[in-house]
Every structure is written in C-alpha cells, then in structure tokens.
Length: 430
Image (cartoon, rainbow, N blue to C red; front, side, top):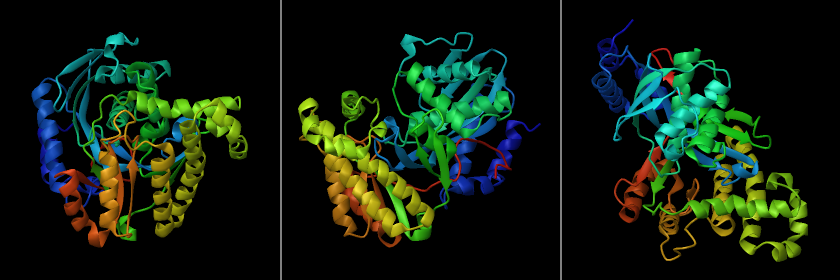
C-alpha cells in the first residue's frame, strides 16, 4: 500500500494529470497538483497516526435554467463546475469524524449519537451527523473518519458550497465504508435530508443533484422521491462561448425572509386550487382565474406564479437546446429566463433595501459591455449574490477587465463544466 510520500511523489510528477485534465480548466494542472499536495501535507500534520488517506472531490454547481422552480416540483437544468471541494480521508476506529477544513477550526463529531442536535443547526457538524444518520437509517455502513478538506467553491456565490460539502461527505462514507455502492442520485437525496433535518435549511434537491450527478443535467422534480435525471454532453467552448460568474459584492445577511417568501407565495396560489405545489396546477386554470386570485392573494404572488409556469416550460426547452447543440436558441432562452426573474420572480434585490441594487448594476454593466453579443442573468437564489454571463470567446478577456472596474478586482470567475460529480480521485478515475 502506498504511503503519503508515495502519493505526493506521484502527484508532483504528474501521475494524476490525466484525471485533473478532465476535472479542471486547461492551463491549471500545476495549480491543482500543488493544491492536492498541500492537502496531503495538512493531513499528515493533523493525523500523523492515521493510515494513508484516499483523495476525493465534489464540485460546485451552476444553475442553467429553472430559477426557483425546483421547490414547486418543477423542471431545472444545472451543471457541475470546475470549482470544487477536495478531501483527504481515511478510516479511524474511534467512531468519530475528525475534520479539519482549511480556514476553520478542528472539529470532532461523535457518531455514537446520531440524533438532531439543536446547538448544531447551521453548522458543519450538523451536515456530517445528518449524513451519517441517514446512511445508518437506510441500512448502509458508517464509521470513524479522519478528514482534511480544502475548497475553491465560493461561499455565498450561488455555486452551492453547502451541497458540494454534503456530496463530498456522502461520497467519502460511500467509498470508505460501502465500497462505493451508493449512486449519485441517492447521495444527493441523503445530502438534502441532512440539510433539511439536521442543518435546518428547507432546501430543494437541485443543488445536491447537480453537484452529485455531474455534467449538464436536466431534472424533473414532479415526483421528488424519484426525480427524472438526464445527462447531456455539451460544451460552451465548442460553441465559442465563455461562462463567467460575477460576484456583485452584495450583502448576504438577513435574506432568509426574502428567500422563504418565494415558495410561500407560490404555494398560496397553489392552495387557491386546492393543491400544495404549482406543478400540480394546470397553467390554463391559473390564467383563467387571475381576477379572483388578485382578491384572494397578492399581486407579487401572481407574478411569481407566472414566472414559475413560464420558467418550468423554458427549462425543458433549454434541455432540448443543449441536446441539439443549438447555442443561439440557448442564449435566447437564457435571456428570457433572466428577464422573467427580474420582472416577475423579483429576486434581484431585497425588498427591505431598494436603494442598494448591486446585482441590477452588474446586469446593466454586463449588458452594456456585451453589445448584444452575449447574455447575462441573475444566478442562483438571487437577491444580490452573483450574475451569470455567457460571453463570446473573442471578447471574454476584455469583458472581464471592464466588468471588474465596476464590480471589483477578482469578481469575475471563469467557469467550465466538469463531466462528473462527487468522486474518489485515483490514477484510474477515468
């Protein structure tokens, strides 16, 4: 069995480069060699008595279409990206997860207690305990783990750092204790359960699914217990386009009520028809009852319901455009999605602070710089996080330079789509 020195030597000599070339952008191999070497060195310092660790990776995700449709059992398109979380992990015989995440304090989670701990809500231990508990409840094996984690998934960016972490931990438990028996969809579902029940966040399944399955995925959540998932092989670069996520430097605090209002208002429209989710309501019935709905609910709820019905159909059209490799249609649909989010969903800036609109300014700037040759839209949950921009390759470098004059140095993040979700990294991973 290789020791850490052997693995470090293999990494430094490029032994993992064929795998890294599949996961990461061209021209970044040296960076990732160093990154994994640093991770292993941290593991050796933190856990000097542990056995040689195995390497793991789980990506962040970008939403492509279906803005705020998943919680109404709608359709979405998303993709895993080159920015990821990586881990070095090995078993221990303590029945504890001992974890050191780069930039955070060392923590221990005792797996003898798998109950929900109120004082762990919104913390890393909650996600680990919740994942372990769900594995156990489903009849899978769990046990102690020594693990070091390093992340390049931007926190608060709409790239789903929490879902990437859940998929990473699920993949580690699956590989170390279950011979990799859990499929990506099940790992995503376990991550959602951990986030909902233990972490205390009522999220949908979109984030975990995109991080776990990998590549471009179209997902139909009509039956959330058995979502329909379809992968599509598509590359923006093959069509001459670059994708950026731009951090608009918005304030992410006190947004819980803004996010919660969207599904609440959509469900109020569904309730008028005696249903729980908008996906259960025929679109024609919604429009036929607009007058009475205004009396029973409120105008913003109507606008958000309209966004759901049109965006749900649009997500299905985007999935087909990707299959057909029809970039002009894809761009038109993305532009329509962005305008619907702005006008009808209204998740661009928080209602309690209308004078501060960093995402609106970023969208205005991007649209001006693109000169009609690309598309920009709000990304993820909205309310001031990031915008997504598709830029022709020949103007990508200039776009980023000019954009950062407004949004700040280092705010434009170049993304590529990676073909897989959570995996164990070996020399034979592909």
